[in-house]
Image (cartoon, rainbow, N blue to C red; front, side):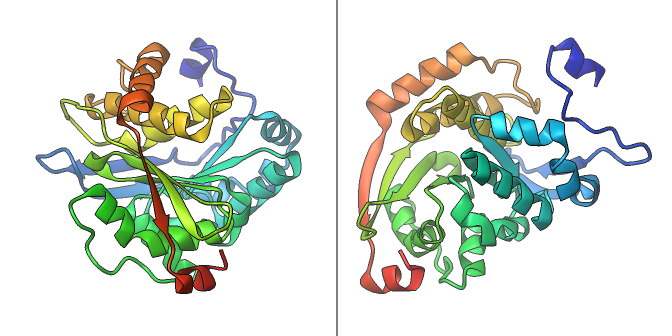
Length: 282
């Protein structure tokens, strides 16, 4: 708490629970900097961040006043439901970060109240499977467009459940912003590649991508610009061994995002098979 106060960050909505263990994560990375194994203890969040706590006046007021609310899969299904309910009542958009494939399904019943989700391939497949739709059975091709086409049924399943945007992370391939076109017959995709980087660790890359996107959305920028900011922020993450990259700054992120938007964004229109639209109710 002292470090947060020293940085002049608000602690009004932080609850201190005596006797509880602060959530921790132990991660093992391979020689390429990719995650090889991970063990997490987040039981405090799952057990103590209850709907009752979310309904407390300071938290409810903060949720209602936020430009956007970010929730992740470490929350219990009950807490996710309550936070989504409050956000919907206040007209506040919600971003859901799945965290892992097993936890991604916690929001499956809430997708109609979620504006953005940011799964990787495994999390996207798990979410689609939870919606009783087809999952990604085949290994996607090396090319980004081929990968997106192979995942199209899963993307359509999640979009068809009511999510407005899927921010699909593709590792070294960058990320793609996916949404249904107005008539529901195709998925509109904006793909942006990962920025060149001297990779030290992939830990935190997804979190920084979400943070960069939220930074842009909170400033009123459109979704494609938010994706560019997210990819720019993730570059700083992979070039650092720290969870919070010391080189991360608003000016650098905005500069790199502008370059991505003007020169490197690729827009695709992926038509949906008629059976996909019927299955996904989209």
